Image 1 (cartoon, rainbow, N blue to C red):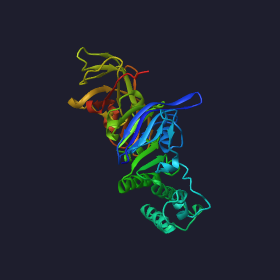
Image 2: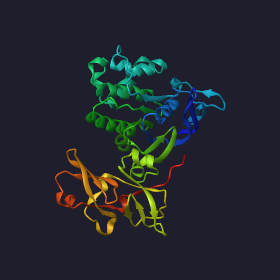
Image 3: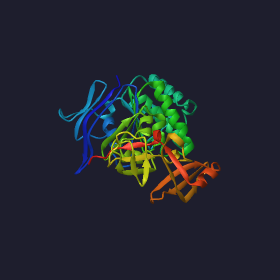
Image 4: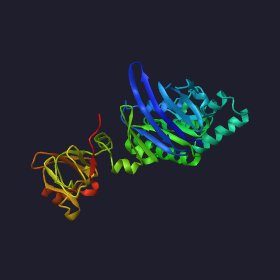
Length: 357
């Protein structure tokens, strides 16, 4: 069906290699997001699947069809891959009506009669809530409406695969949330296999079955949103998904159950080693001693506070000079915060193994 298999994918632009031996299997009907900062290779990977880039080496199979295979020097062009794609820039024709924009991929492939193409386009526009705007032109639409037109065009192009290249990055924050929910709804309604590219972790976590974190043209971690959020495997992933506190372990107990990092003692750990790091989110640094649930409890001195509405970000210095960051609800817990005692529970601490070069 719509399974996507990527094997040994590499891509170079002149002397610069941007993808390094990627292997990835995306199951039919799965929604997978490629997540990472600019330059990590996520968009290049997507464009190779779409046929907009020719891989330097490797093999890509969609369903049972090898669409790119460097060993056999075979390459299926984009218009024959039957994948739908939604771009960051919308890429809709300004001189065409909404309906004509959505019909365009069908006309280009000479698919169906004029009446059948019109009906297909109308069904796609109805799916994205734009049926009543079919005769309007792009300049008469808002940004969110133009993005819905781009989604509808992608839907009529798709056989079993939909590709999204940062499609919501030009929208304001409130509209992005509404549109990401719409993207997920359409995925479930049509059952496509979907690959989505973004640098926004909240967006990725909200809509994905699995998230692939990329770094330097390689896959750093693959997992469900919860697995990525709770158990990052490296300092790179932890930092990218928002772990503000990352401390290197410089001493451990003989049984590996206690560690010292940043001058702080952490208890109740499992098989930690020198060279590992401990990571925890600022929202998990809680005022008070924490009792038996605490892996770490220490007295601190506040060095800086930043009010951000519902929360206050508090920067804390430990007696040994380490800095940790806490995020606490604004206007609450002032007595506990003033005491300077904070704790972190064991379940909120991720152990990061050393990264390989």
